[in-house]
Length: 160
Image 1 (spheres, rainbow, N blue to C red):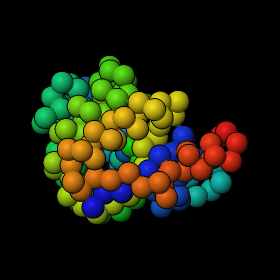
Image 2: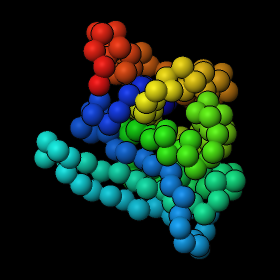
Image 3: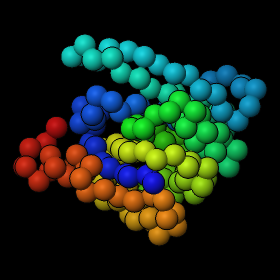
């Protein structure tokens, strides 16, 4: 089962959450996608992990999204967050449409139990619309209000 949550930015992530970015490759790749695992220290000195999934053509989503799902599962990451802004940029679509297209190819292949946080930025409403459609299509994907860190911040009246 996948529990989905929202963050407005990376600073709202639990320290155990791993970042996943989908990026446009500047070089020709031997396959539809190539992974780079990154390790760095944030401004508080906490070690962070991330996966950059580089693709040559966003249009080959049906080929690379299942491979991305497999790679994340092989890494064994139980908590990770998707950089939605990177996905929007590479897909050249509004947030809800980019997530619809990506999710249709990704969630069928992703079979792990995990907490997946979506970096909603300023796109909370359209990201939520895509999440509702995912819930209707994929029985293993559910939004968890307990992991709505963006909603918790918004409800307290403060903004990050």
